[in-house]
Image (tube, rainbow, N blue to C red; front, top):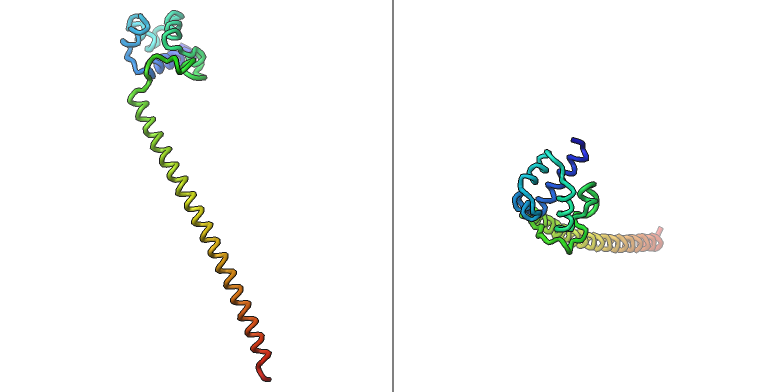
Length: 151
């Protein structure tokens, strides 16, 4: 069996699992025997043209994805007649959503931290200016005092 055939069979099985169907349920939808699905997935035979045609017609399967693994699984997601929300997919979506929320929180925290740092930098700059002004005043005062001091 070639690498191409192995990958095709893997995508065939992945497709069934994406749909959340057992071999039996998938076979029933395709109006074929479960043994055919089992034989394809175990690598005993490849999917026939008839089986692939039924998958295209029934599920709007993108053959480019089936044969190459490239592109979207469905030609049109609107036509996908089967809910592909398996518990595993739902769990992954929930984890993604939680991570997205965490990223938003970090973005807000970083923005607040940046503003806080900008405020501190401004305060430091103002204090340095004030210090320099005081030092100039002291130098000027000291210079005037030296001028006034009798020698």
